[in-house]
Amino acid sequence: MIEDILLQALVHRTSLRSALARRFIKQFSLFSYEKRLSIDAVDRPYYGYCIFQAARLASLLKYPRISAIEFGCGGGNGLLNAEMHIKEIMKIFPVEIELYGFDSGSGLPPPVDYRDMPHYFRPGLYGMDQGSLQQRLERAKLVIGDVRDTCATFLQKYQPAPIGCVFHDLDYYSSTRDALTLFDNEPRYFLPRVFMYFDDIIGNDTWLCNEFSGERLAIEEFNQTHDLKKMSANPFVVKKHSYSWWPDQIFIYHDFEHPQYNNFIADKEQAVHENNIKQKN
Image (cartoon, rainbow, N blue to C red; front, side, top):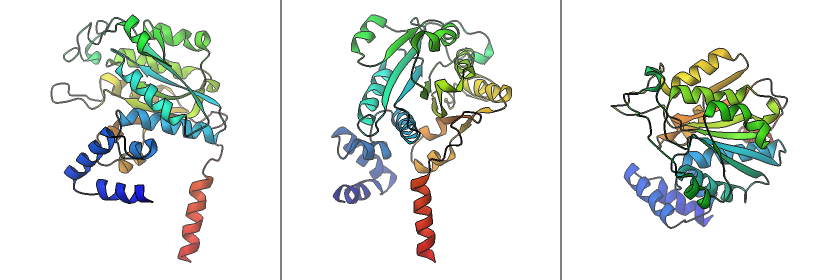
């Protein structure tokens, strides 16, 4: 109760006070991890959100293990951050979480055409020191090579737990398109709904992201070519974290034919709803 009162007092103020409060809570790791995550008082809250929700869904569906994937690791800061979130989230849910990082190992390849937005990206950016990074990682496994090739062999080679969340940071349209071919595999390799973060769909005044190139185009083409597998924005998280920029980059992959897609998991929410109705009556 005291934590809740303090959180209300610290966070629900003016936007400036809210930002300062979150920074203070984050710096000194005040309150529980789950509470810090709920107010963005952690590094890369979008990674934490996706991993947390994937583990929550897995728990509700009785999956003992899931996998998280990062496409485009560069220097490795994202993988290291994901490891931190996984360590905390595994304390909350009885779900073991595997982590895989896909990267060419040599930075961005040459762009294919205008759809890769070469006016903003040049070959060689975001290189990786694979040996140094591997020594720093505790959980993540690196999957090195052209993403078109590694996606074709990944499931058979690594036999990962069902995939529950994916972070896309490949920058290019062509690379993102190739990464999305992973979802063309059998439902047993995935949760029925997969939480996704796309790093490169907003951009800036120089980049000028649009739906005709980059990651946005790759998502659009995937949806056009799949009748019962779709990737869509998550409107609830935009409202839930209205003070943050990242919710607009959260998508959910829906496999409507997945054997467990229709399994009922909303006991808690429906109980609250029924209780509210009873109180009103």
